[in-house]
Image 1 (cartoon, rainbow, N blue to C red):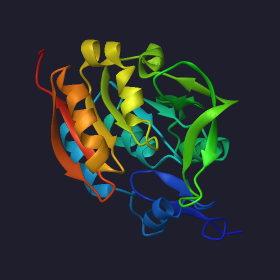
Image 2: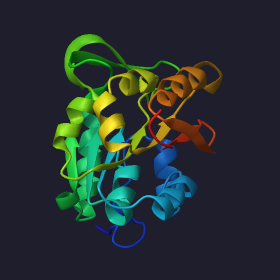
Image 3: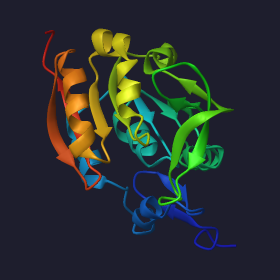
Image 4: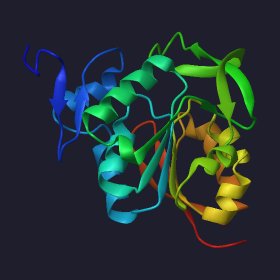
Length: 223
């Protein structure tokens, strides 16, 4: 069986991925030999290097693979959906990047405990955190205990849990001052609360990427 028939695509510099499953938006980019959200990733590569990167909502590994190959000494890949995690782990292994990636099958929010992932009816590829007992829920401060280096960057794409996760990241924000890349699906409603929360820690909003969109937040110093 050829690699093409097996659904393997080679991107750049040894990164390879399996094309399978329902995550169409990412895999369409991979099928063209590109990373999804390539302009934002290129910007990150130019401006942020070294240390530990946290990929919150790692899905099937697009950002994790890029961070591990080009940017970070360590990537903590956090993904609560088991099917996505298996795909992610397969892609990291295929790209021979296991030594740089720590896998955490969990959801991020403002509490530690248990929950469940509920598939969204209007976005079947996406899942919301709900009450239940099928998935581990962690905070960013708890997750920071897994970091082997200073935390340089945190990316969050966690389906309307971004504010909650940031509200339980006091130690990360005050001790590490990482760059933040936060997806806000409804910026009209969500941007002001996130801006206000992060301003208390000395952050200001920077560039905007993509249509979702994702915002960069930069630490400018203690308030």
